[in-house]
Length: 269
Image (cartoon, rainbow, N blue to C red; front, side, top):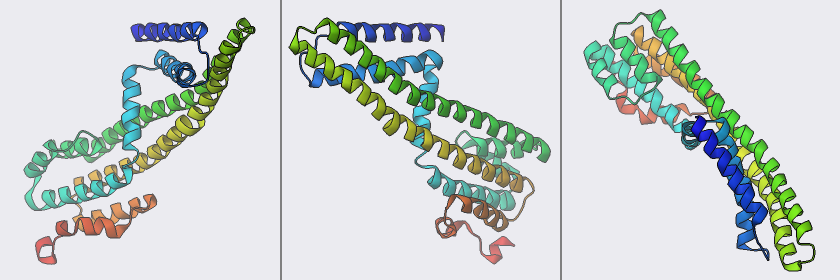
């Protein structure tokens, strides 16, 4: 982390050094590049001073995932109902085999705990702790995006000030004056645009995902505890669909997707 912070500081120094010594004679590709370099490069470098690179990449994956949470909700309910059928009809060993094929997450942890004959209270405590850890990681990513939204306009203003300083040094050279003025104006423009069109909407999207993901984790916890109690799969489906209604996931969609998983009355016996 110390090495990363030092590298980020060096990157910031290089960016501002290049900006102080740039020679831009007209408004065009070069002025846009240097303005973006100050705002976007400076924002990323300042972020890397405060947060590890792994956190930045994890946040990027989290943002991509935030656009599919509603589809995941339906598949999560169907997965829990399918596991309830397996546990009810075939026992603990097939359930343990199914747990091995699940992706890492709260559902896999809960099913494995059931397979290990962990008590219901202990399962509930472990799932609550894991859900809290996940929420804290998401909260850190949200704060990082929020800080980037605050940094971008500030660095845009810094780019403007640097360019104005260079304008005073080239007051007698009209060609360089135009280029420096272009960078000055574009720096402020990119800072405001990146903050309000990119980072703020993404942080709001991540906050929405956190709320939906918290509800999804509640559904998983409820489903795991129902599995532990060996409740009927139809009762589990009804309970989880009622919880998912808060998300706006239609019950018809979940029922249609899992129609083949619902047993007939003869099979239920």
